[in-house]
Length: 177
Image 1 (spheres, one colour):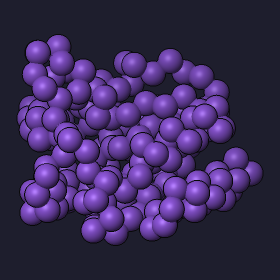
Image 2 (cartoon, rainbow, N blue to C red; image 1 turned 90 degrees about the vertical axis):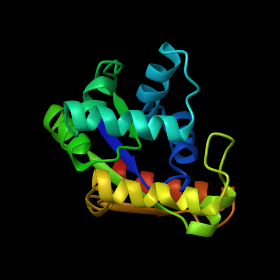
Image 3 (cartoon, one colour; image 1 turned 30 degrees about the vertical axis):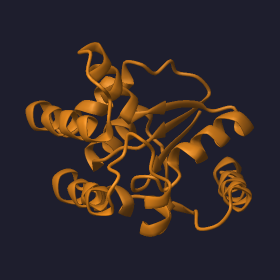
Image 4 (cartoon, rainbow, N blue to C red; image 1 turned 90 degrees about the horizontal axis):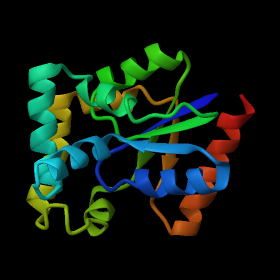
């Protein structure tokens, strides 16, 4: 079993890479944010990024920094290859390291300006608020430790085709091990 954890700042390309890896390499994809979105929908609330951040922060404060990982784990149907997308704390990664033993952590990097142009309707629409999410991830959740834990890196500075080629290249390394 291969377990990959994709990490990166907002709109770096985690979901784009994950969708591609899922299609091309047959991995089962699970996203940390889906846990929060589902909880908000259950409460009949709009799952905006701001609402998910607020809920995630509250849950982590009340139940520990690995709470979202534990909730995500309940959704996982163990299959051959797993792709876990978007942890925000090192404790979330550590939780899955303990469960699966070996996990491959891959960081996706894209420039701040490029990430802002990729925002969706769920994201803050002004640059200051958009970038404030990065600061919140670093200060409240320890995102720097998450990024530093990566063993491999995918760069997402060019076109979609260039990014897919980058994903293919990194996946060849992962699958060769």
